[in-house]
Image 1 (cartoon, rainbow, N blue to C red):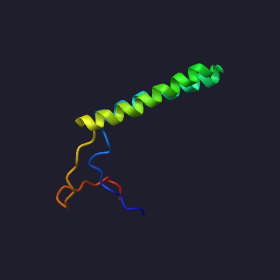
Image 2 (cartoon, helix red, strand yellow):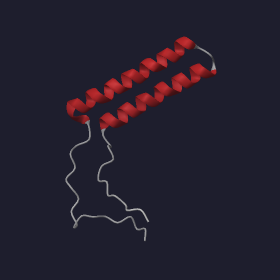
Image 3 (cartoon, rainbow, N blue to C red):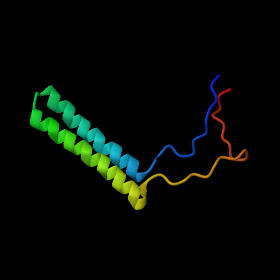
Length: 83
């Protein structure tokens, strides 16, 4: 059976969630544009995605990104409950 790694933080941060949210909106706009065959709307979706990437990076640099997590010690190891 594969070893289970312990992850204290999966990148849950304001910067990551904001970037993902904006990227989801952008891809939804692009998908709609493809479905209705509207090229200008597709490029609006591309622009929204670019804004999402830039916004995530800027927020990360502003201190809203994932923080450094202390290493896991044998005392603080959590089990998944799977045998």
